[in-house]
Length: 299
Image (cartoon, helix red, strand yellow):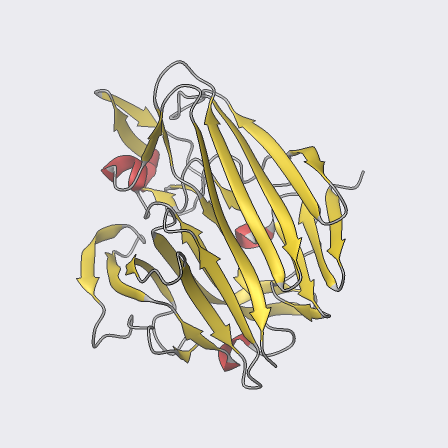
């Protein structure tokens, strides 16, 4: 049984998987803008997945709520709970048309997260890319902590990932320990984490979490630029106050591992359930709607 939804607007096309509501393919004028994958089931390396009710890691899967220690299921070899509760969930189709699709999935009370949420994500194509809208409603009887992220791996056609120039408008980055857990922040000026002027992908840091993001025109914009001038922009509303960057050499391409770059908009940093940083506490029946997107220009 097919678990994907194909949408099209002119020469902009996308494929969305019901597993993790993951964006599996996005092309504009035949140019692929994300690393595609074709596996049935959960996306490899969380490719394109929606991360809710927290992105990234919770240290040891443990956090405290109202004086009671909560223990989440451990889902990463390093001993953390990673990327929320819907990474292996098959979402239900909840509407759409030729150029848009909405997928929805509930979160019910479970080990380490005793709350009830209704979640959905809408992918709406534009002539130059896609707009992604997340909606989270607290369907429970008390306040619920929520953070949201997305995990796209970006590309510009067949240009090798390390031939792209990355610009990320962040003034601060997190110190990450050997287990990728934050231990504080620092000013990126004069360090390999300063990506504001544009650097070859991977020439600066290959793994980091960034904040103190520059807002221009009402959004934060991270870009990848190809040598021929084509530029892919990932824009995010200021509610997404963090960006996680990961450059890897083992993304599962069709002919074996390839280099890939993940640029992940997040509303909270790693370990937010434990630290409380930037968590959104939704009141009963309150809905949170937030948006990001991708657009291609130039060339």
